[in-house]
Image (tube, rainbow, N blue to C red; front, side, top):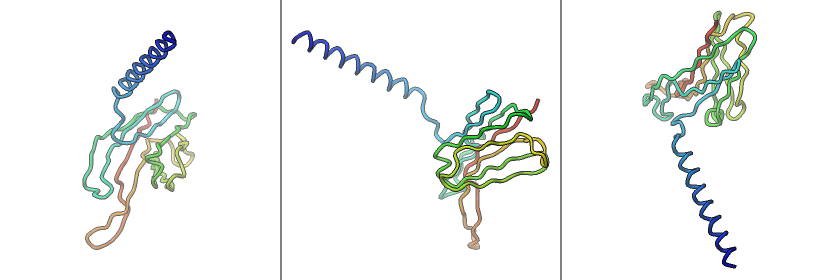
Length: 160
């Protein structure tokens, strides 16, 4: 009986120590303050925080960390963009900038978490970069409503 109790106590102590170490390790690297997007191509992965992040209810109250990512691209490999649930849960916009013109795609809330972005467009040329934007409707002094980007993440394409 005493031997079984000693083993049980030892297991409880080891489990407590392991839990404490796990909590300590996880708390050493704090989660990012704002959501991040991920972009992947040719074995490279970049995670990018926002270039600008404004309060939805007060779009003039902004943080501007000016974060951006850079991916080395080529004509054969597309870019895989992933947005986290914190972005995909809202309506969001993808702006792809090519040599010839931009392409704008709008996504409904909860509809899209990943997008494949071609690096070459037959009509627009090479990809310069892309941005993920979160729009909100604002009203000016005259009562006119219009969309305003309250958060943006951007990635530049670097060609060889």
